[in-house]
Image (cartoon, rainbow, N blue to C red; front, top):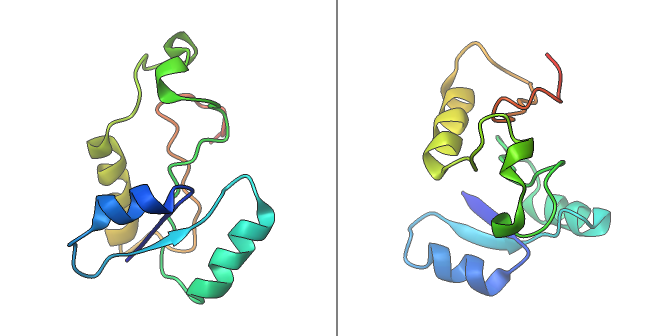
Length: 107
């Protein structure tokens, strides 16, 4: 498994000592950075991105009133969604947007 993010030092610290986990640098706001990560990784089985297309800024500063569920997703919320998509024997070749009930992605 590869975990990637903008802060390589924080990523390395978060996954230190976890067997089978490597870390990489990527900045989701930079197309060249994304392309570089793809080139370094080669073929991948699954991609999980917790980057938001709608939220901008620090989590502490987000306006929860704009979020229909009035809360930030937890690691358990994300883990459940990821496990559903990667273990389903019926779901394949799909991009699944988990939006916390926001609905802006459509159906």
